[in-house]
Image (tube, rainbow, N blue to C red; front, side, top):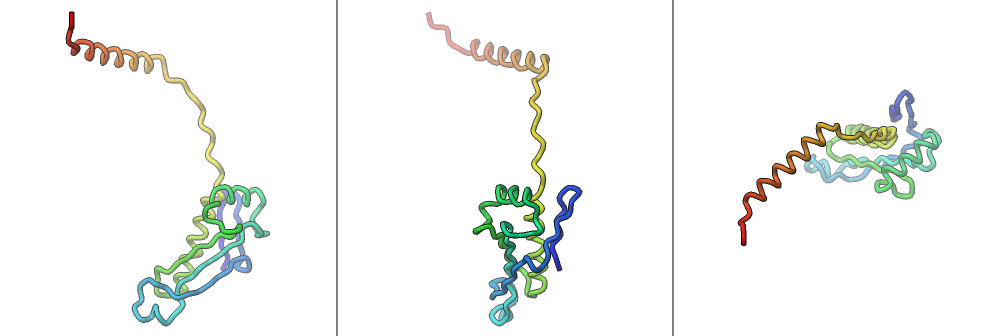
Length: 142
C-alpha cells in the first residue's frame, strides 16, 4: 500500500519500498494485550533521498517541516488503536496529511491596498471627536 499525495493537479505517489516501518510496544488502550503485542507503529520516510518526490517539493518540504525532520527523515507514530493494522493505517494517513501540508503551494502574496478616502475621513473625525471629549474633561487651571 503506497501513500498518494495530491499537489495541485499533480499526484505524488510514495511506494512502500521507500517507507520504513517499525513496530514496538504501545502505551495506549488494550490492557494486558498492550504488554504482549507490538501494536505501536512508527512510519519513516527519507525525504532527502526519495526518488519519487520532485526536487522542488523536497526543498519546499525541508523549509516547512524542518523541525520535524531528523537528518532529512520524517517519522510519524501511531499508537491510539489496539490493532497493529489500524495503527499502520492511521500512521499512513497522518504521513499523507503532513506531506500534503508540506507540499502545498505557497499562498499568493497579498496585494497592498489603500483605505478609501471616506474611511480615512471617518477615522480622523472619530479621533478628533475623542480628543475633544478628553479636552472637555480636563480641569482648567488659571
